[in-house]
Length: 86
Image (cartoon, rainbow, N blue to C red):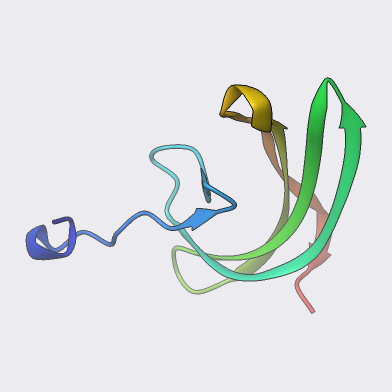
């Protein structure tokens, strides 16, 4: 539906959208993943994003998941320092 209106379809990573609404970027590749068991699982994704203008940048997304409650929540989506994407 979004493609018919000239909009790019929202990409999802593990059932969670790649970035908060209004961000002009494109998920390029998954760089690193780790998990932490809490009251559920905290997934840590390091992703490469193509921003407006074509520059690539690394971000870390933290996603809290409780499978037994069908619950997923994006906790944070932050740039990884000033390091350029390799």
